[in-house]
Amino acid sequence: MDMLNGSIADKLLTFALPLAATGMLQQLFNAADVAVVGRFAGKNAMAAVGSNSPVIGLLVNGFVGIALGANVVISKFTGEKNANGVSKSVHTSVLFAVVSGFLITLLGELIAPPFLRLLSVPDEVFDMAVLYLRVYLLGLPVIFLYNFESAIFRSQGDTRTPLICLFISGVINVILNLFFVLVVGMTVDGVATATVISNLVSSGMLFVMLRRRKDIIRIETKKIRIHADVLGSIIRIGLPAGLQSMVFSISNLCIQSAINSLGADVMAASSAAFNIEILAYYLVNSFGQACTTFVGQNYGARNIPRCRKVTRISLALDVGITAAVSFLILSLGRPLLGIFNSDPAIASYGIIRLRYILAAEAVNAVMEIMSGAMRGYGYSLMPALITFAGVCGIRITWVYTIFRMTPSFNTLMMVYPLSWVVTAIALVVLYVLFMQRFREEM
Image 1 (cartoon, rainbow, N blue to C red):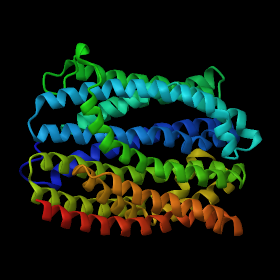
Image 2 (image 1 turned 30 degrees about the vertical axis):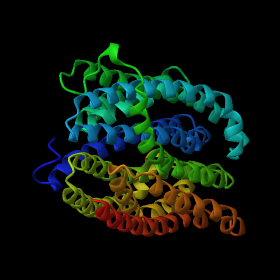
Image 3 (image 1 turned 90 degrees about the vertical axis):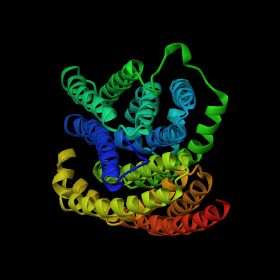
């Protein structure tokens, strides 16, 4: 994809929609884990899997953000037509992903039980929650590798190849879910094992494809090593982005602890609603990543007017499409919740969460585009700090003040739109100030 010349809107759509479909497909297969245990192993097993969502999000989202740093660095080198820089970045990214995955796996296995205790996971689901997390952690090296490999493809404008690989592995995941639970008789460990195997398949397929490429992102085994200068650039840009992603997970851990205190029905309902509402977020996030990649390449080519135009068009597309899809999902909320569990209490609690989250999802789109644009320029730290203060700060404060005074599910869900609105306003102001200073320096 030529991101440096020609029309913008159609290319943003071509880039973002397969990326959104990748995230949605990944979430649908994750939702299959919840649906299979919810239907065939009971609502306690469903609650056990759902209670791990914020924990897994904390681990994975941080490295997805760092992978975005690899995307930016490779995109910039591509815009500069620096083939050696691209090659060094690709090989550094692959090794860093695998090594980091093993280290986080070891750490996670050690702290899994006490970590879940901190989240106030109820005793009736605690053992299953620990079992699911321990098995899932074994797959982190290949999960991280898939995300970094996907970032390599995205840096060249290719979002279809990771989607195809994910679809194939996802079908395998669903088949293995049913096999392990219905045939073998496993519960949460069965769906976790299926997830690990399917991620091994998707990351392996992308690795083979990168080995067979004939262009600048081709992987050569003998060149796989860490280049300190490149890794430094990836971490400098990616770590703040990773921290920004982790902010949501950190605050969600706090909220999950509050949800757990409301009982198994609310836990199960929240888990089901999360697996539905997150589909809209992947649209939000895909345009943010598209904006980052397009701005990164054009900034590498020193075409600042085109960078600004990319940001404006990305914002319009993201807000408009997200609002429409959120409305559609909300209108189908109850039938979708029924897929996970037929209990009326779970449906009632689930629709409460969907209403609060989806009604404000377009505001989240503003946050993603503002942050994504500034990351494309290599300016990641301040957006991350603002997001930390606006999202994490407000949510944690809310849980320990307002929610404690009125401990209801409605009260808890109010904090989502509130934190998004405050943070979005702050990021818009930051972007305007950044562009003013940026023009002066240019």
